[in-house]
Image (cartoon, rainbow, N blue to C red; front, side, top):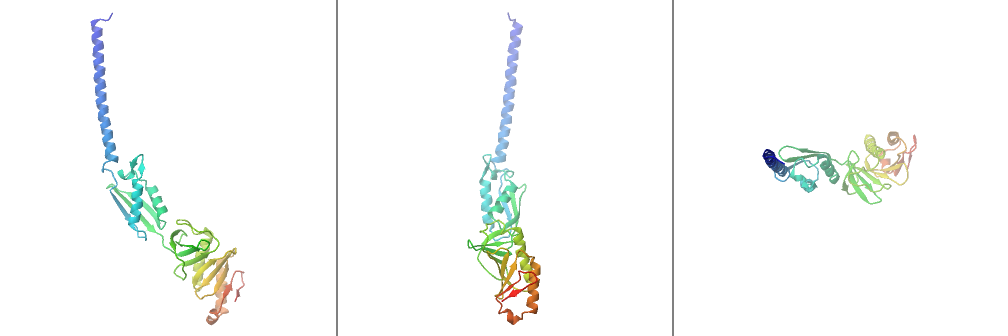
Length: 268
């Protein structure tokens, strides 16, 4: 049988528990309100939103085109939240890769963030050193010093760009290398060697025959070279031949000079 004192103590403890539970509930409500408020402030208000984008580049691509790509990226969602809602949501590396993929002319792309709601995009641009035409697909592209294709081109000739007509390879694609590293180095070396030999290079032709390149000179005649032999000795032999065996008047009558066999020159 319970005493009056025990009944009083039970009632007191029950009241104390209810009071504690009420206090905990109040604190949880306050904490929840703070969390919701902070979450809203960070991701749904303008407190941390991306409100400005600065683009620093000087390529033929307009800033408006780059801005459109960035806006599309920012409108995508991370965990159901638009990236534009918080300056910390955009991934700098992924955005740089996206811009490099979308605009191959851009290189050394850097994306920075500052504390004033601004994204800063900085990039240099590729400069064309040549035009590579894939004759099987009738497609021509500009390429830079690294051999990267960055824009479509029309077929041309002359000394301003290294002009290559490729009858072997399949068509390239924007952002890819125009050919393998070995062949590209050979072609860039050809341009330098022809300049040293003071022979104008109109175009280099890669025929279907293996290990061969035909060079069309600005004078109209051709040079046959081997990619299976060192380039410099072939051009040196050509220079000696032109200096000692052919006058300037006779050069205009040349059809070709074949320098593919070491220490031998054949011509017509």
